[in-house]
Amino acid sequence: MARSEARLLVPALVFIALVVAAVASLGTPLITSVATSLHVSLGSAQWTLTIALLSGAVATPVLGRLGAGPHRRATILITLAVVVAGSALTVLPLPFAWLLAGRAAQGVGLGLTALMMGVARDHLPEERGSSVIALISVVSIIGAGVGYPLAALLAELGGLRAAYGLGLVVTAAALLTAWRSVPDAPEGRSARVDVTGAVVLAAALLLVLLLAGERDLWSRHPAVAAGLAVVAVALLCVWCVIELRSTAPLVDVRAVRHPAVAGANLAMFVGGIGMYLLLTLITRYAQTPHGAGYGFGLTTFVAGLVLIPFSVLGFVAGKLTPRARTRISDPLLLAGSAVVVGGGFALFAVARSDLAELFAAMGVLGFGVGGFSAAMPGVILAVTPKSETSSAMSFNYVVRSVGYSLGSAFGGLILTTGTGPGHLFPDDSAYTTAALAGIGAMAITTLTSLTLARRRDRRDRGR
Image (cartoon, rainbow, N blue to C red; front, side, top):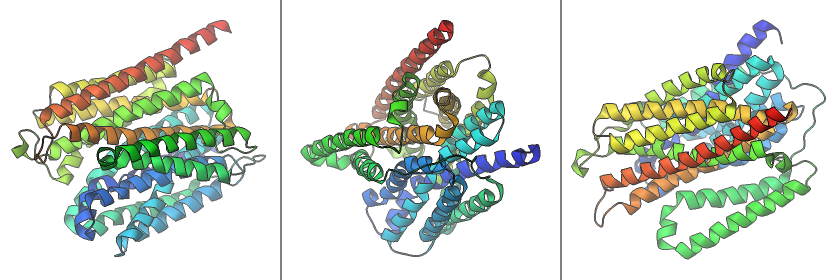
Protein backbone atom coordinates (compact mmCIF):
# COMPACT_ATOMS: atom_id res chain seq x y z
CA MET A 1 0.00 0.00 0.00
CA ALA A 2 1.05 3.60 -0.53
CA ARG A 3 2.15 5.38 2.62
CA SER A 4 -0.79 7.81 2.51
CA GLU A 5 -3.25 4.92 2.16
CA ALA A 6 -1.62 3.13 5.09
CA ARG A 7 -2.00 6.24 7.24
CA LEU A 8 -5.73 6.27 6.52
CA LEU A 9 -6.09 2.52 6.97
CA VAL A 10 -4.71 2.35 10.51
CA PRO A 11 -7.21 4.74 12.16
CA ALA A 12 -10.01 3.13 10.16
CA LEU A 13 -9.20 -0.36 11.47
CA VAL A 14 -8.86 0.86 15.05
CA PHE A 15 -12.09 2.87 14.83
CA ILE A 16 -14.09 -0.08 13.50
CA ALA A 17 -12.75 -2.40 16.23
CA LEU A 18 -13.56 0.21 18.89
CA VAL A 19 -17.10 0.75 17.58
CA VAL A 20 -18.13 -2.92 17.44
CA ALA A 21 -16.75 -3.50 20.95
CA ALA A 22 -18.48 -0.43 22.40
CA VAL A 23 -21.81 -1.21 20.74
CA ALA A 24 -21.79 -4.83 21.92
CA SER A 25 -21.21 -3.62 25.50
CA LEU A 26 -24.18 -1.21 25.42
CA GLY A 27 -26.33 -3.83 27.10
CA THR A 28 -24.39 -3.67 30.37
CA PRO A 29 -25.48 -0.24 31.70
CA LEU A 30 -28.97 -0.45 30.21
CA ILE A 31 -30.23 -3.70 31.74
CA THR A 32 -32.24 -1.96 34.48
CA SER A 33 -33.63 0.59 32.00
CA VAL A 34 -34.76 -2.21 29.67
CA ALA A 35 -36.51 -4.00 32.53
CA THR A 36 -38.40 -0.91 33.68
CA SER A 37 -39.14 0.58 30.26
CA LEU A 38 -40.30 -2.63 28.54
CA HIS A 39 -41.81 -4.24 31.67
CA VAL A 40 -39.72 -7.40 31.67
CA SER A 41 -37.79 -9.10 34.46
CA LEU A 42 -34.16 -8.30 35.15
CA GLY A 43 -33.30 -11.86 34.11
CA SER A 44 -34.94 -11.31 30.73
CA ALA A 45 -33.32 -7.90 30.37
CA GLN A 46 -29.92 -9.53 31.03
CA TRP A 47 -30.31 -11.28 27.68
CA THR A 48 -29.78 -7.95 25.90
CA LEU A 49 -26.13 -8.46 26.87
CA THR A 50 -25.96 -12.27 26.72
CA ILE A 51 -27.47 -12.54 23.24
CA ALA A 52 -24.91 -10.07 21.88
CA LEU A 53 -22.08 -12.15 23.36
CA LEU A 54 -23.62 -15.33 21.96
CA SER A 55 -24.09 -14.02 18.41
CA GLY A 56 -20.58 -12.57 18.53
CA ALA A 57 -19.07 -15.85 19.70
CA VAL A 58 -20.82 -17.77 16.91
CA ALA A 59 -20.17 -15.18 14.20
CA THR A 60 -16.48 -14.77 15.06
CA PRO A 61 -15.18 -18.10 13.67
CA VAL A 62 -17.54 -17.90 10.67
CA LEU A 63 -16.37 -14.40 9.79
CA GLY A 64 -12.79 -15.42 10.50
CA ARG A 65 -13.06 -18.18 7.89
CA LEU A 66 -14.71 -15.85 5.37
CA GLY A 67 -12.01 -13.28 6.13
CA ALA A 68 -9.36 -15.79 5.08
CA GLY A 69 -10.85 -15.87 1.57
CA PRO A 70 -11.00 -13.50 -1.39
CA HIS A 71 -14.21 -11.73 -0.28
CA ARG A 72 -12.96 -10.24 2.98
CA ARG A 73 -13.92 -6.66 2.07
CA ALA A 74 -17.46 -7.71 1.13
CA THR A 75 -17.69 -9.73 4.36
CA ILE A 76 -16.71 -6.68 6.42
CA LEU A 77 -19.18 -4.38 4.65
CA ILE A 78 -22.09 -6.83 4.83
CA THR A 79 -21.43 -7.53 8.51
CA LEU A 80 -21.38 -3.82 9.34
CA ALA A 81 -24.61 -3.39 7.39
CA VAL A 82 -26.16 -6.11 9.58
CA VAL A 83 -24.91 -4.29 12.69
CA VAL A 84 -26.41 -1.00 11.44
CA ALA A 85 -29.75 -2.74 10.78
CA GLY A 86 -29.66 -4.23 14.26
CA SER A 87 -28.89 -0.82 15.73
CA ALA A 88 -31.95 0.57 13.99
CA LEU A 89 -34.11 -2.16 15.58
CA THR A 90 -32.87 -1.19 19.04
CA VAL A 91 -33.86 2.45 18.46
CA LEU A 92 -37.36 1.88 17.06
CA PRO A 93 -40.24 1.66 19.61
CA LEU A 94 -40.78 -2.07 19.04
CA PRO A 95 -41.56 -4.91 21.49
CA PHE A 96 -38.85 -6.58 23.58
CA ALA A 97 -38.36 -9.47 21.12
CA TRP A 98 -37.33 -7.01 18.40
CA LEU A 99 -34.85 -5.39 20.79
CA LEU A 100 -33.27 -8.81 21.37
CA ALA A 101 -33.09 -9.36 17.62
CA GLY A 102 -31.36 -6.00 17.22
CA ARG A 103 -28.89 -6.78 19.99
CA ALA A 104 -28.12 -10.15 18.37
CA ALA A 105 -27.38 -8.36 15.09
CA GLN A 106 -25.15 -5.87 16.89
CA GLY A 107 -23.22 -8.70 18.52
CA VAL A 108 -22.32 -10.12 15.12
CA GLY A 109 -19.95 -7.17 14.77
CA LEU A 110 -17.67 -8.64 17.44
CA GLY A 111 -16.44 -11.05 14.78
CA LEU A 112 -14.91 -8.17 12.82
CA THR A 113 -12.04 -7.63 15.26
CA ALA A 114 -10.09 -10.62 13.92
CA LEU A 115 -10.72 -9.46 10.34
CA MET A 116 -9.28 -6.06 11.17
CA MET A 117 -6.15 -7.85 12.36
CA GLY A 118 -6.01 -9.82 9.12
CA VAL A 119 -6.22 -6.63 7.06
CA ALA A 120 -3.42 -5.04 9.09
CA ARG A 121 -1.17 -8.08 8.71
CA ASP A 122 -1.75 -8.27 4.94
CA HIS A 123 -1.45 -4.59 4.03
CA LEU A 124 1.02 -3.03 6.47
CA PRO A 125 4.78 -3.55 6.90
CA GLU A 126 5.54 -6.31 9.41
CA GLU A 127 6.66 -4.09 12.30
CA ARG A 128 3.88 -1.56 11.77
CA GLY A 129 1.34 -4.34 11.32
CA SER A 130 2.31 -5.97 14.60
CA SER A 131 1.84 -2.75 16.56
CA VAL A 132 -1.52 -2.06 14.89
CA ILE A 133 -2.72 -5.61 15.62
CA ALA A 134 -1.77 -5.11 19.27
CA LEU A 135 -3.68 -1.81 19.36
CA ILE A 136 -6.75 -3.40 17.76
CA SER A 137 -6.67 -6.12 20.41
CA VAL A 138 -6.55 -3.47 23.14
CA VAL A 139 -9.37 -1.26 21.84
CA SER A 140 -11.57 -4.32 21.40
CA ILE A 141 -11.49 -4.61 25.20
CA ILE A 142 -11.40 -0.99 26.35
CA GLY A 143 -14.36 -0.27 24.09
CA ALA A 144 -16.55 -1.35 26.98
CA GLY A 145 -15.08 1.44 29.09
CA VAL A 146 -15.88 3.96 26.36
CA GLY A 147 -19.44 2.84 25.67
CA TYR A 148 -20.59 2.34 29.26
CA PRO A 149 -20.59 5.96 30.56
CA LEU A 150 -21.84 7.42 27.26
CA ALA A 151 -24.77 5.02 27.10
CA ALA A 152 -25.59 5.60 30.77
CA LEU A 153 -25.56 9.39 30.31
CA LEU A 154 -27.83 9.23 27.26
CA ALA A 155 -30.19 6.88 29.12
CA GLU A 156 -30.48 9.39 31.98
CA LEU A 157 -31.00 12.36 29.64
CA GLY A 158 -33.13 10.91 26.86
CA GLY A 159 -34.24 7.45 27.86
CA LEU A 160 -33.46 3.94 26.66
CA ARG A 161 -33.93 4.53 22.92
CA ALA A 162 -31.66 7.59 22.98
CA ALA A 163 -28.89 5.46 24.50
CA TYR A 164 -29.27 2.84 21.78
CA GLY A 165 -29.31 5.69 19.25
CA LEU A 166 -25.61 6.13 20.02
CA GLY A 167 -25.03 2.67 18.60
CA LEU A 168 -26.87 3.52 15.38
CA VAL A 169 -24.81 6.67 14.79
CA VAL A 170 -21.39 5.12 15.40
CA THR A 171 -22.09 1.90 13.49
CA ALA A 172 -23.25 3.91 10.47
CA ALA A 173 -20.00 5.87 10.71
CA ALA A 174 -18.04 2.61 10.91
CA LEU A 175 -19.78 1.27 7.80
CA LEU A 176 -18.90 4.42 5.85
CA THR A 177 -15.30 4.25 7.12
CA ALA A 178 -14.94 0.61 6.03
CA TRP A 179 -16.42 1.33 2.60
CA ARG A 180 -13.89 4.09 2.00
CA SER A 181 -10.78 2.60 3.62
CA VAL A 182 -10.71 -1.22 3.72
CA PRO A 183 -8.85 -2.74 0.73
CA ASP A 184 -9.53 -6.02 -1.02
CA ALA A 185 -7.82 -9.19 0.21
CA PRO A 186 -4.67 -10.37 -1.59
CA GLU A 187 -5.27 -12.59 -4.62
CA GLY A 188 -5.00 -16.35 -4.45
CA ARG A 189 -7.05 -16.82 -1.27
CA SER A 190 -9.94 -19.25 -0.94
CA ALA A 191 -12.32 -20.03 1.88
CA ARG A 192 -15.37 -22.21 2.52
CA VAL A 193 -17.59 -22.17 5.59
CA ASP A 194 -18.27 -25.34 7.55
CA VAL A 195 -22.02 -24.89 8.10
CA THR A 196 -22.42 -28.06 10.20
CA GLY A 197 -19.57 -27.01 12.47
CA ALA A 198 -21.10 -23.54 12.84
CA VAL A 199 -24.48 -24.97 13.90
CA VAL A 200 -22.96 -27.35 16.47
CA LEU A 201 -20.73 -24.60 17.85
CA ALA A 202 -23.72 -22.26 18.12
CA ALA A 203 -25.69 -24.86 20.09
CA ALA A 204 -22.75 -25.54 22.43
CA LEU A 205 -22.07 -21.85 23.07
CA LEU A 206 -25.78 -21.18 23.63
CA LEU A 207 -25.76 -23.74 26.43
CA VAL A 208 -22.51 -22.40 27.90
CA LEU A 209 -23.80 -18.82 27.98
CA LEU A 210 -27.20 -19.96 29.27
CA LEU A 211 -25.52 -21.78 32.15
CA ALA A 212 -23.27 -18.78 32.79
CA GLY A 213 -26.06 -16.21 32.67
CA GLU A 214 -28.97 -18.05 34.34
CA ARG A 215 -27.60 -18.35 37.88
CA ASP A 216 -31.05 -19.26 39.26
CA LEU A 217 -30.94 -22.45 37.21
CA TRP A 218 -28.04 -23.74 39.31
CA SER A 219 -29.72 -22.92 42.62
CA ARG A 220 -33.26 -24.08 41.78
CA HIS A 221 -32.64 -26.92 39.32
CA PRO A 222 -29.07 -28.16 39.85
CA ALA A 223 -29.71 -31.51 38.17
CA VAL A 224 -31.00 -29.81 35.00
CA ALA A 225 -28.07 -27.41 35.02
CA ALA A 226 -25.58 -30.27 35.41
CA GLY A 227 -27.26 -32.19 32.59
CA LEU A 228 -27.07 -29.17 30.28
CA ALA A 229 -23.40 -28.75 31.19
CA VAL A 230 -22.72 -32.34 30.13
CA VAL A 231 -24.58 -31.76 26.85
CA ALA A 232 -22.54 -28.59 26.22
CA VAL A 233 -19.26 -30.46 26.76
CA ALA A 234 -20.44 -33.27 24.49
CA LEU A 235 -21.37 -30.80 21.74
CA LEU A 236 -17.96 -29.13 21.99
CA CYS A 237 -16.31 -32.55 21.64
CA VAL A 238 -18.49 -33.32 18.60
CA TRP A 239 -17.54 -29.93 17.15
CA CYS A 240 -13.84 -30.72 17.54
CA VAL A 241 -14.33 -34.04 15.70
CA ILE A 242 -16.22 -32.26 12.91
CA GLU A 243 -13.47 -29.66 12.57
CA LEU A 244 -10.74 -32.31 12.44
CA ARG A 245 -12.54 -34.18 9.66
CA SER A 246 -13.65 -31.13 7.67
CA THR A 247 -11.72 -30.05 4.57
CA ALA A 248 -12.69 -26.44 5.33
CA PRO A 249 -12.95 -26.16 9.14
CA LEU A 250 -14.12 -23.02 10.91
CA VAL A 251 -10.99 -23.27 13.02
CA ASP A 252 -7.88 -25.29 12.22
CA VAL A 253 -8.00 -27.39 15.39
CA ARG A 254 -4.67 -29.00 14.54
CA ALA A 255 -3.05 -25.56 14.57
CA VAL A 256 -4.76 -24.77 17.86
CA ARG A 257 -3.01 -27.82 19.32
CA HIS A 258 0.36 -26.13 18.80
CA PRO A 259 1.76 -25.59 22.33
CA ALA A 260 2.11 -21.83 21.85
CA VAL A 261 -1.44 -21.43 20.53
CA ALA A 262 -2.99 -23.82 23.06
CA GLY A 263 -1.15 -22.15 25.92
CA ALA A 264 -2.14 -18.67 24.76
CA ASN A 265 -5.80 -19.68 24.51
CA LEU A 266 -5.68 -21.27 27.97
CA ALA A 267 -4.16 -18.08 29.35
CA MET A 268 -6.85 -16.05 27.58
CA PHE A 269 -9.64 -18.24 28.94
CA VAL A 270 -8.55 -18.19 32.58
CA GLY A 271 -7.36 -14.59 32.36
CA GLY A 272 -10.67 -13.57 30.78
CA ILE A 273 -12.55 -15.05 33.72
CA GLY A 274 -10.45 -13.01 36.14
CA MET A 275 -10.49 -9.77 34.16
CA TYR A 276 -14.24 -9.62 33.68
CA LEU A 277 -14.81 -10.69 37.27
CA LEU A 278 -13.23 -7.48 38.59
CA LEU A 279 -14.61 -5.29 35.82
CA THR A 280 -18.20 -6.13 36.79
CA LEU A 281 -17.59 -6.18 40.55
CA ILE A 282 -16.20 -2.66 40.83
CA THR A 283 -19.08 -0.97 39.01
CA ARG A 284 -21.61 -2.94 41.07
CA TYR A 285 -19.79 -2.01 44.28
CA ALA A 286 -19.79 1.66 43.31
CA GLN A 287 -23.58 1.65 42.77
CA THR A 288 -24.39 -0.08 46.08
CA PRO A 289 -26.20 2.41 48.36
CA HIS A 290 -24.64 3.51 51.65
CA GLY A 291 -27.40 1.73 53.55
CA ALA A 292 -25.73 -1.60 52.79
CA GLY A 293 -22.82 -0.60 55.02
CA TYR A 294 -20.45 -0.05 52.11
CA GLY A 295 -20.57 1.30 48.57
CA PHE A 296 -21.09 4.84 47.28
CA GLY A 297 -24.65 4.88 45.91
CA LEU A 298 -23.52 6.24 42.52
CA THR A 299 -25.84 6.60 39.56
CA THR A 300 -25.27 4.42 36.51
CA PHE A 301 -23.54 7.28 34.67
CA VAL A 302 -21.22 8.26 37.52
CA ALA A 303 -20.39 4.61 38.16
CA GLY A 304 -19.54 4.34 34.48
CA LEU A 305 -16.95 7.08 34.93
CA VAL A 306 -15.03 4.64 37.12
CA LEU A 307 -14.25 2.84 33.86
CA ILE A 308 -12.39 5.84 32.43
CA PRO A 309 -9.07 4.96 34.16
CA PHE A 310 -9.53 1.43 32.81
CA SER A 311 -9.84 2.67 29.23
CA VAL A 312 -7.15 5.35 29.42
CA LEU A 313 -4.45 3.21 31.05
CA GLY A 314 -5.42 0.24 28.90
CA PHE A 315 -4.79 2.37 25.81
CA VAL A 316 -1.47 3.57 27.25
CA ALA A 317 -0.37 -0.01 27.89
CA GLY A 318 -1.38 -0.94 24.36
CA LYS A 319 0.83 1.81 22.96
CA LEU A 320 3.79 0.88 25.18
CA THR A 321 3.66 -2.87 24.57
CA PRO A 322 5.02 -2.84 20.98
CA ARG A 323 8.12 -1.02 22.25
CA ALA A 324 8.51 -3.45 25.12
CA ARG A 325 8.30 -6.38 22.67
CA THR A 326 11.70 -5.41 21.24
CA ARG A 327 13.27 -6.38 24.58
CA ILE A 328 10.79 -8.75 26.22
CA SER A 329 9.14 -11.79 24.62
CA ASP A 330 5.37 -11.83 24.22
CA PRO A 331 4.84 -14.72 26.72
CA LEU A 332 6.77 -12.80 29.38
CA LEU A 333 4.68 -9.72 28.63
CA LEU A 334 1.58 -11.86 29.13
CA ALA A 335 2.91 -13.06 32.47
CA GLY A 336 3.83 -9.55 33.62
CA SER A 337 0.45 -8.18 32.57
CA ALA A 338 -1.34 -10.97 34.44
CA VAL A 339 0.61 -10.01 37.56
CA VAL A 340 -0.52 -6.39 37.12
CA VAL A 341 -4.16 -7.50 36.79
CA GLY A 342 -3.71 -9.55 39.95
CA GLY A 343 -2.39 -6.40 41.59
CA GLY A 344 -5.65 -4.66 40.71
CA PHE A 345 -7.54 -7.46 42.47
CA ALA A 346 -5.28 -7.19 45.51
CA LEU A 347 -5.78 -3.42 45.67
CA PHE A 348 -9.56 -3.83 45.50
CA ALA A 349 -9.43 -6.54 48.19
CA VAL A 350 -7.63 -4.39 50.77
CA ALA A 351 -8.57 -0.80 49.85
CA ARG A 352 -12.04 0.17 48.63
CA SER A 353 -13.39 2.49 51.32
CA ASP A 354 -12.69 5.57 49.21
CA LEU A 355 -13.83 6.30 45.65
CA ALA A 356 -10.27 7.24 44.67
CA GLU A 357 -9.21 3.69 45.59
CA LEU A 358 -11.76 2.28 43.14
CA PHE A 359 -10.37 4.54 40.43
CA ALA A 360 -6.86 3.31 41.29
CA ALA A 361 -7.88 -0.36 41.18
CA MET A 362 -9.62 0.15 37.85
CA GLY A 363 -6.59 1.96 36.46
CA VAL A 364 -4.27 -0.90 37.48
CA LEU A 365 -6.72 -3.38 35.94
CA GLY A 366 -6.83 -1.37 32.71
CA PHE A 367 -3.06 -1.21 32.42
CA GLY A 368 -2.74 -4.95 32.98
CA VAL A 369 -5.56 -5.84 30.59
CA GLY A 370 -4.15 -3.47 27.95
CA GLY A 371 -0.73 -5.07 28.13
CA PHE A 372 -2.18 -8.58 28.14
CA SER A 373 -4.38 -7.89 25.13
CA ALA A 374 -1.57 -6.26 23.18
CA ALA A 375 0.84 -9.17 23.78
CA MET A 376 -1.65 -11.98 23.09
CA PRO A 377 -1.73 -11.70 19.24
CA GLY A 378 2.06 -11.87 19.07
CA VAL A 379 2.10 -15.25 20.82
CA ILE A 380 -0.46 -16.74 18.43
CA LEU A 381 0.61 -15.10 15.16
CA ALA A 382 4.26 -16.06 15.65
CA VAL A 383 3.27 -19.62 14.67
CA THR A 384 0.36 -18.78 12.33
CA PRO A 385 0.54 -18.29 8.52
CA LYS A 386 -0.65 -14.91 7.23
CA SER A 387 -3.59 -16.48 5.42
CA GLU A 388 -4.88 -17.95 8.72
CA THR A 389 -4.60 -14.74 10.78
CA SER A 390 -8.34 -14.07 10.93
CA SER A 391 -9.21 -17.70 11.69
CA ALA A 392 -6.59 -18.09 14.45
CA MET A 393 -7.52 -14.85 16.18
CA SER A 394 -11.22 -15.64 15.80
CA PHE A 395 -10.83 -18.77 17.90
CA ASN A 396 -8.97 -16.75 20.52
CA TYR A 397 -11.87 -14.30 20.66
CA VAL A 398 -14.38 -17.11 21.09
CA VAL A 399 -12.29 -18.33 24.04
CA ARG A 400 -12.20 -14.79 25.41
CA SER A 401 -15.98 -14.36 25.09
CA VAL A 402 -16.65 -17.58 26.98
CA GLY A 403 -14.11 -16.60 29.65
CA TYR A 404 -15.73 -13.19 30.07
CA SER A 405 -19.18 -14.74 30.37
CA LEU A 406 -18.00 -17.22 32.98
CA GLY A 407 -16.18 -14.45 34.86
CA SER A 408 -19.37 -12.42 35.04
CA ALA A 409 -21.33 -15.49 36.15
CA PHE A 410 -18.77 -16.49 38.79
CA GLY A 411 -18.74 -12.97 40.19
CA GLY A 412 -22.51 -12.97 40.45
CA LEU A 413 -22.53 -16.42 42.01
CA ILE A 414 -20.01 -15.41 44.70
CA LEU A 415 -22.03 -12.30 45.56
CA THR A 416 -25.28 -14.29 45.62
CA THR A 417 -23.72 -16.82 47.98
CA GLY A 418 -22.58 -13.94 50.19
CA THR A 419 -26.06 -12.41 50.43
CA GLY A 420 -27.75 -13.22 53.71
CA PRO A 421 -31.41 -14.31 54.00
CA GLY A 422 -33.73 -11.34 53.58
CA HIS A 423 -30.89 -9.07 52.49
CA LEU A 424 -30.95 -7.22 49.18
CA PHE A 425 -27.18 -6.68 48.94
CA PRO A 426 -24.29 -9.08 49.61
CA ASP A 427 -22.00 -8.72 52.59
CA ASP A 428 -18.89 -6.65 52.03
CA SER A 429 -16.79 -9.77 52.64
CA ALA A 430 -18.28 -11.35 49.50
CA TYR A 431 -16.40 -8.80 47.40
CA THR A 432 -13.17 -9.76 49.17
CA THR A 433 -13.85 -13.43 48.42
CA ALA A 434 -14.44 -12.61 44.74
CA ALA A 435 -11.22 -10.59 44.62
CA LEU A 436 -9.26 -13.51 46.09
CA ALA A 437 -10.80 -15.84 43.50
CA GLY A 438 -9.65 -13.40 40.81
CA ILE A 439 -6.13 -13.41 42.20
CA GLY A 440 -6.15 -17.20 41.93
CA ALA A 441 -7.26 -17.01 38.28
CA MET A 442 -4.50 -14.55 37.43
CA ALA A 443 -1.93 -16.74 39.22
CA ILE A 444 -2.88 -19.62 36.91
CA THR A 445 -2.64 -17.27 33.93
CA THR A 446 0.81 -16.11 35.03
CA LEU A 447 2.11 -19.67 35.41
CA THR A 448 0.72 -20.63 31.98
CA SER A 449 2.41 -17.62 30.37
CA LEU A 450 5.73 -18.38 32.09
CA THR A 451 5.54 -21.93 30.74
CA LEU A 452 5.10 -20.50 27.24
CA ALA A 453 8.11 -18.25 27.80
CA ARG A 454 10.29 -21.19 28.85
CA ARG A 455 9.25 -23.20 25.78
CA ARG A 456 10.11 -20.28 23.51
CA ASP A 457 13.50 -19.83 25.18
CA ARG A 458 14.33 -23.53 24.69
CA ARG A 459 13.22 -23.33 21.06
CA ASP A 460 15.33 -20.24 20.42
CA ARG A 461 18.41 -21.83 22.03
CA GLY A 462 17.93 -24.92 19.90
CA ARG A 463 18.20 -22.97 16.66
